[in-house]
Image 1 (cartoon, rainbow, N blue to C red):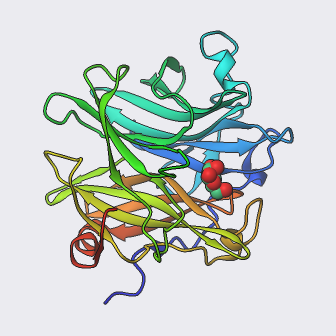
Image 2 (cartoon, rainbow, N blue to C red):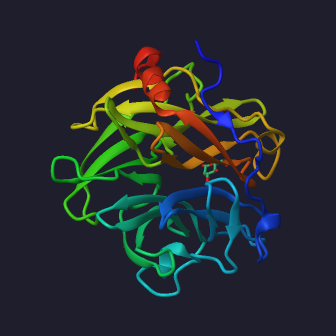
Length: 311
Ligand code: BMA
């Protein structure tokens, strides 16, 4: 069986705070999409207040990015968003849907963390639409097309009795969500036994929706964040066809092992290419951005042939 499923880009890390023309402490957990023949990255940065903002970078090849001179998204100054973004905006994801780029992001405030939905057509202006969860929710990804006449999202609510699991919900308009259901949970004595959450927006394949998620394992030296893959049924994405028993990426390079938070690889983006590969982007140690490539069919087969229970 293959040893490495993700081939790290030799120029990692692809973006660090040294590349940002304004003062930030970190560059991590970025969304990436193809727009107008280029790659656009929306990346999270901690400020020296400990709160986060979102910057923008552009690239011709998906690996060498140039940061634009001003932040793309900072906490809202107007209600109803202001109250819930007081402590920062984090971990964006982008889904291209019906001619617009929809951005889900974590909004932090004294009321907890919840998910905001915003949209852009040109990555110049951005329109906030609504909060689409209450607290305590993080890591929402929207599927790139309607399934059976409804929009679909995966997200990660948290409660003491059912910690950090992946749930699905449906919507007629991207604003009102319901029919929610738990679809995947951390599994004991497994690399993701403490927490799981959606990573990149799901990718459509012939055999199902491929979801790259993060999983967390507790150790005496703190938690380790890794990436794994799951396959959802094409027509009924609440049905999990397989979850890989093996992780696909673990902290290994120095900038993944050491940084703002050590032992972290955390993804918010995967861009499928026409040649059957996918570019996967991840934050290393909550400090820098990294990239790598994988073969989509290999990840799908891994879900189907080397599977652990979904919950
Ligand atoms: C998670 C989130 C991520 C972060 C990760 C590792 O809970 O806060 O934004 O990358 O922890 O610190």
